[in-house]
Image (cartoon, rainbow, N blue to C red; front, side, top):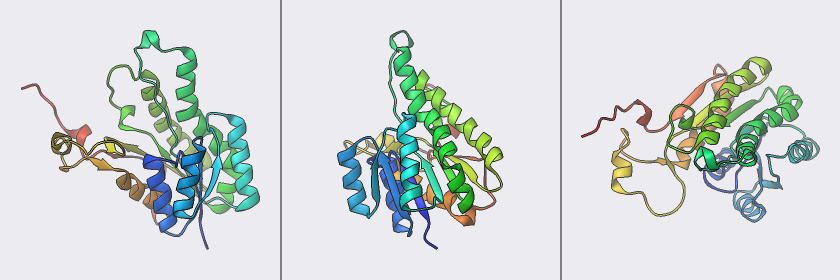
Length: 237
């Protein structure tokens, strides 16, 4: 039986890599993104179906899941990947900006899970959320992003308990993943205990495993994929 997967924020970066991997593994993939041009290009490149959606908006999420129910008729895998960040000093961060980050990164996962619950239960499916090591560590001026990712880790285990045993829910927290721009510097590689910076394909492989029925005994868990950096002691010279 062909599995149906939905990946949000799949026009670029990690989301694109996840959608590409799931399609390569034989799933029928639906990708959602607010960037219509890039989303359509990604869908054409991997043989997926694209739905333009801003997942910070409840009405877009309702329409997205309704489209899957009408077109594919089932949903086996939901990957909540879409995210945004507004990096500003706390005094300069408006409530509107805070709410946008929380809505996109955290509230959207609640809304997606709620809207897709019946489809996922019927398929005995799974949800994979994409959080961040920023749930556990921070740099300055990232309060909204850190709060949203920390909330996503907690929401993951809450959903796992509420939706189990029908639906498994797990979280991947990437560290430093190089997805665009110039080639990484040498020190970006050597800083990581594994000897290299992360690639989007590293996250895609982990998501593919967690969404597969072979991972059927895993739920409510967070998997940190950061090349070991959060375990590395750092002292001044």
